[in-house]
Image (cartoon, rainbow, N blue to C red; front, top):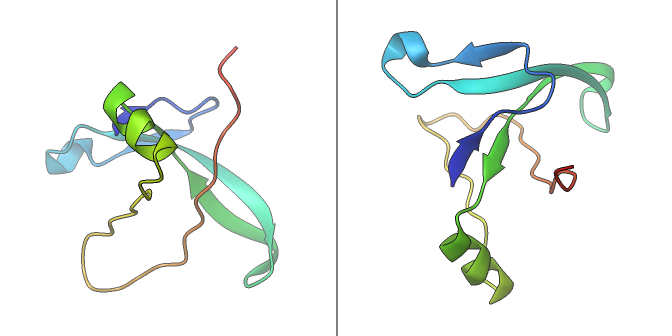
Length: 82
């Protein structure tokens, strides 16, 4: 997966730590766990043509988290680019 530039990005994480930099958008959502007005961050990831082909064939999308603590996460498909 390639890092995407999410529409309405509010900041970039990780560049000062030597990473490529991850543009993110700060949002507020209504969460079944956190309740109304739960702060969240959204990022965009763009699958390569090979990854798209594997997804179409049934390969799973794997979310890898660095470290030993698992924060709450959600994965979804974004809007089709205009």
